[in-house]
Image (cartoon, rainbow, N blue to C red; front, side):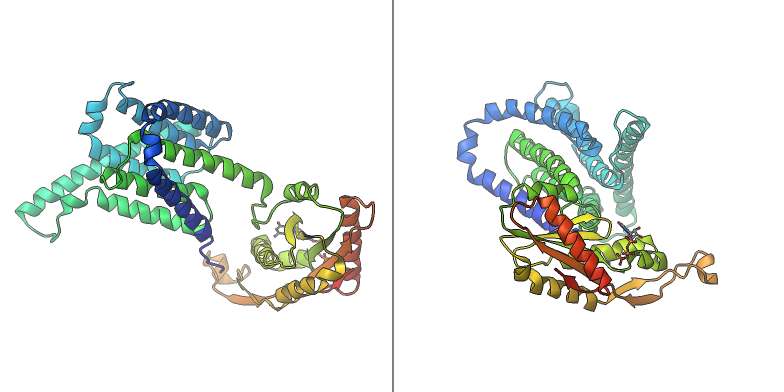
Length: 396
Ligand SMILES: Nc1nc2c(ncn2[C@@H]2O[C@H](COP(=O)(O)OP(=O)(O)OP(=O)(O)O)[C@@H](O)[C@H]2O)c(=O)[nH]1
């Protein structure tokens, strides 16, 4: 049910933003070429800020990535010994980084200074081992193929490309499946790092790493913003965003309170998970609001629409359109057959069922000297009247 590419938008936006940043960097290279020495110094600051900032926000995976970038840069700059070892093991380390990125996509952000942190370090060490094993395996295959040819193509040439494409496809899939800025950013970094490694992208290491590190810092900033102001389930702006928005309203506006009818019964019949999916669908319909309105998730199965510079009379037609749109929407759900023998045996049911929900709406125009909270209260009373009138209607 509802198998959509929910992360498509985030993936495309991230790809576009990163491509534009790099295009811009190329366009402006005359400007920064002369300041390379400064960029090399500033990068230390960017990396340090990124590590502290991401750690503060418990974005462990980003902290780990930035620590790895810092170590790499310190070695490359000769601050830490090991550059010749790095060059000699370039291929191995690159494959290990590819595996490590896939690993980071699979795990969750957990406290670094805890048992989880130790587990993550073990996981990353395993990636190094896995990469070594892969190189040995390919070596062995190449030798075996020379003695008894059984593979038509040059497998040796695929030693990096094969894991790279496999992991890139895996991360692309994860990134498209659900909106996740982290996965989308890792994907773009993987593409960029590969272009750099293949020498198709020529720019100083310090500039490349600065752009990548800034990208990860932005991921933390944007994700934190969304965490604070977006409702996680519906992706609509949250109650906090509503309160913030209310402060920017002028004297003339109207408020609509929107509530799903008999949602408790719906949850009881189909289960909380299906209830969640339906909430998401209703929210996505409400997000198509016109007439200059903005919709927020007020809480539970209640939403609020604000129309600046409008009266209730101006927006009733639009609210009616939304109400009708949702009432007409046939939602296909996969109903679990909990009581059947098949279900008891742990087999999932494939029974598809079409359901629909309705909404009731109460709308109120702000009166002179009325506070935002008072207008919301009036809209709530109108909603109560809509429910009393039999639900699935708009009341003012
Ligand atoms: N699945 C799901 N259910 C939720 C969520 N938030 C609130 N609910 C449920 O929404 C239901 C609200 O029920 P009520 O306030 O009694 O109202 P109602 O059943 O919609 O009936 P009317 O509003 O009178 O039409 C409760 O069962 C809550 O558990 C959520 O995020 N997900």
